[in-house]
Structures are given as C-alpha cells and as structure tokens.
Amino acid sequence: MFLSLEEKKRRYDAVSDVLKKNHLSGLLIFSNAQVNQQGFVRYFTDLPIPIYSHALLFIPDGEPFLFTPSPLQTYWAKRRAWIAEDRIKLSRDAGQEMGIIIKGLKKGEENFGVLNFDTMGAKDYRALTILCPGIQLVDATSLMEDIRRQKSAEEIDLVRASAEIAMLSREIINREMKVGISEEELCAKVEEAVRAHGAERTFYLISSSLGGLFPYVPGTQKLDGVSPLLFSIEVSGRGGYWTQMVRTYFWQTPQGTLLNMHQTLKEIMDVARQELRPGQRVAHVAEKMRAIIQERGFEYGVHFGHGLGLDVVEESLINTMNNNILLPGQIITVHPHLIHEKESLGIWTGDTFLIRENETINLTSDAPQDI
Image (tube, rainbow, N blue to C red; front, side, top):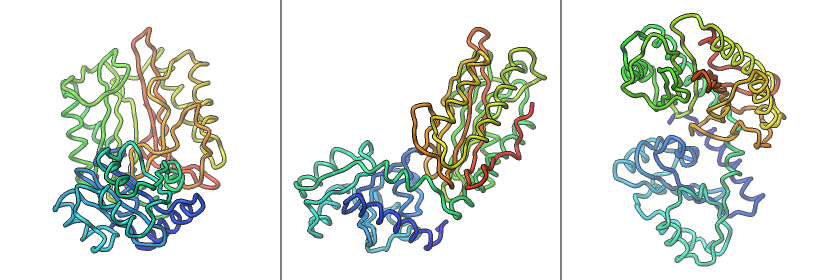
C-alpha cells in the first residue's frame, strides 16, 4: 500500500456522504489501463492497474467489491489492495456479478451512479439490467471528480515526489542534447533516469525540427543543432500520482520572434500563478492567458492545462468554457503553447502547481524556465 488506512476512511466517508445527498444507493466503477482511465478504481483500492480492465461496486458504509480480470491481478489485489480478500472476485463478467450482489441486497430498483459511462461495456450493461430491470443508472462522474479534485496531505506528498522525478529530465536533456541524437534515444535516456528514481508511468511529447509546431510522440527524427527542442514529460511516481513539466531548449540564445515568444510564455506563467487561487473561475484564468497571447500577435496550440492526480488528465481543464471554481488542494499543470505559423515556429513551457488556501506553489520550480 502507498496510502494509509486513514486515507481510505477519509475517501470512503466523503463518497458515502455525497451518494446519500444525491440519493444514490451505490457506485458502479469501471477503469482500464489507459493512462487517463485508471483513477476511479485506484482511488477506492490504492491498487495499480497495469493491464486489462477492473470494476468495483461501492455501497455506502460498507466494504466495496473489486472485480479483477485475471488470476495475476487477483493475486496481487489480495496482497496490495485496500479491499478485504473475500470481496475480491476474479471475473470477466463484472456487470453480471454486480447485478447478482445488488439483487441480493434488494436494491435492484434503486438509483446507482456509474463511473463512467464511456468505460462501461455493453456486455456489463446488458447483464446488469437483465438481472436488475428496475435499476436506474446515473452518470456520477462529475460528483466523483469534485471529490478527487481536492488532494489530501498524503496525496500531495506523493505528487511532490513525482514532481522531483519530472525535474530530473532537465538535467538529463542538458547533458545528452547533442546533434545527431534521435528523439527516441533522448527520451530513452530520460526514461532510464526517472525509472531508477521511482517512476511508475511516463508519457512524453517532443518536437525537434523546424516547422514542428505541435509536439508528438518520440520518433526517429535526429536533433539538428538548430531547431528548438520542445520537451514534455508527464510522470507518475510511487503511488500513481502524475505531474508534468514542459520546457523548450535552445542551441543558442534565441533572437527576434523566438525571444519574444519565450518572454511571452514567462509572462503568461507569472500571470497564471497569480490567478490560480481558491475561488477563482477556471475560465477567468484561461481568458487571462489567451488575452496575453492575442495581444502579442501569437496563436495558441496545445490547450492551456488541466488537473492532475491518479489520472494524467483530471478536472479542472483550463479553457475559457470551464466555469468550475478552483479549490484548495488542487494540482494543476499549466502549459501554454505558442505558435507562429508564418515563421513556422513553436515554443512550449509548463509546470505543476499546488493551490493552497493562501498561496500557490510551483512544484517544478527547481527546473527553471530560463533560456
């Protein structure tokens, strides 16, 4: 286990309270091994999901049922998960198993929340509704996202550890960024270092050629000694909590448009840090960032940022349409990306921030954005 039983109780109590307030008898939870779809089951189990899909049935004020897809997963769940051994079931038919349990509890005609509908398979849905034809399924994803947005002290400690791992990438790139090395080779050197320091999962985006306005997954492209290198590392450490750090690296001091773009990014990041505070609307923060970009005559490419946690993308998504209110305890990555299509230039930077009641902390500030 990475987290304490006190943290388990805190989560279960919070979820039970929300379910009761929303007149829901329980939750049906489905997660898979994709980097942005693991978090819901893991939130209730403290169990990594390296392969396949898992499901969980949560009833307020009781112990959940965990449905594992293989003997290997069952073996490790019984040794590492928060769930009692007799509630861990090997099953490739989670919907049917859930239906049997719900029917046995005489709750087959009540309201249940689903986390989330887009990872619930048709097979599970059909089996569940055949066994419990009167059940009403409600999308409860946003309710759980609100709970997960505010991180506890234990969660924040794990985020900090992940941020320290992410910052290692700057040291490796400063040492290994040489003409002729490929993007894949460079990322492999970063991967070796971060794995040695406890990285659980990683995700890289990179651009190393002129005209490469948008970064993408590492390829065979070789660094040319001229083009800026855009590099993003998203990494989860022990416990599965993600952080992100983005930097643009130059071969020589940038001039002209590139220098203006770099200075604009630093200004945006300063404004973002000031605006990321409890009670602020997410849309307001995004609008402030967009206004600076437009005033300087640039365009923006990759979206402005997003929440981080057990999934690589969580609420709040930093855009001008999101009216969510920022909360203390949120972890947010802000990563403005500027492009200048006429000159085929792109530049990118980003950090992970912790929002507290009275301050906002840059968790990746030890890897500065200076040229």
